[in-house]
Image (tube, rainbow, N blue to C red; front, side, top):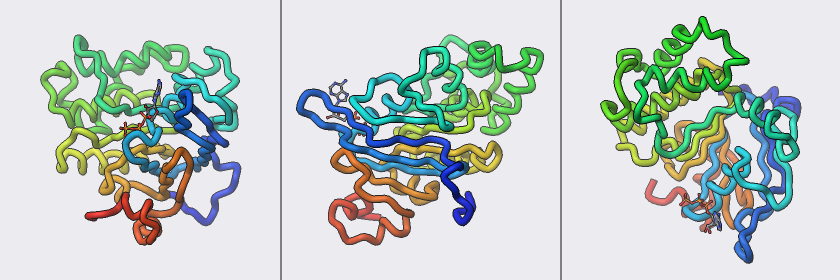
Length: 253
Ligand SMILES: Nc1ncnc2c1ncn2[C@@H]1O[C@H](COP(=O)(O)OP(=O)(O)OP(=O)(O)O)[C@@H](O)[C@H]1O
């Protein structure tokens, strides 16, 4: 976990300023701000329909913003051309809902795939070692020659994580990393996310509505309510607040 005493503005790896996004009269994101600092785990919680997916799509360039800005490592990504965006995207690892592995490829081939896409950045003679290292990080070396259909949901998620890690991203973006997993597998994935943060020194943005996940993983949290950052703070701080809108996130826990 990061040392919060020594944070400076220079340590910001990702920043969203005054993001606005509407669909007709539906003002989904209405002035959202975020700063992700080097080495931290920032959790964003919002209930269903609060605009988490819209925010992620804006963040990865799949959706245009109405206004506001997004910068990654001090570069405004809202104004980059496709090539510059591709280069920057190699610094950002995504783990989306569902593992989205290629069904017709083995685990090894799934992991080699992103290396081929970014072959300008990596030495191809290292492919084998990089595949092994990434698989080792998620504890799945033994599954290297299996097909995705032969893996459990949790294993598929770990392979998807390895496929992302192989590019050594500086920022990890997790969209509902524990959704669809049973409690034990969820716990394993959360522990893995912590190990990865330690090993690779990544900064992580974690979108979730899993309170247990937020409790374990977050250094800091933002509650996305009514399209804006309604509340920010540590899990311990937010979970004690009396505001009913905030309380609703933590009830029964
Ligand atoms: N392409 C689109 N066109 C019109 N409205 C959209 C579009 N995408 C999202 N919305 C609207 O934006 C709002 C937020 O949707 P979003 O999918 O971001 O919610 P979410 O917080 O990710 O929910 P969940 O946790 O259920 O996935 C919803 O009202 C949805 O109808």
